[in-house]
Image (cartoon, rainbow, N blue to C red; front, side):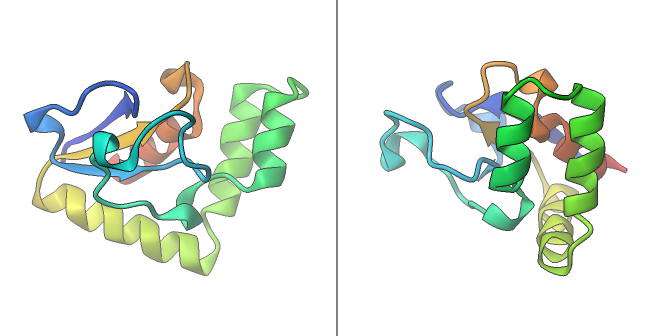
Length: 116
């Protein structure tokens, strides 16, 4: 199973496979056709409340990851997570985020869960 994380602002690459945007909001200044996003499952993105809490600097990345995993246990999120996991079983999947630090973002949490 191949799941990787990239910034949505980076140019698409042939080895990206299915490109899945995992941000709740569309990335600023990016045209939809330039992003080449194949899927945008908003239910597997952090809630607005969780995103605001994390960006306020009140908690650690580890606490954020735990809270995000709890959100992903909801029915709709779990179904979409299974869908993306099925895509990854069939071929390459690239999770796209606008985060400046993808390795400390929700996309990394998603990638870990998809690989398990």
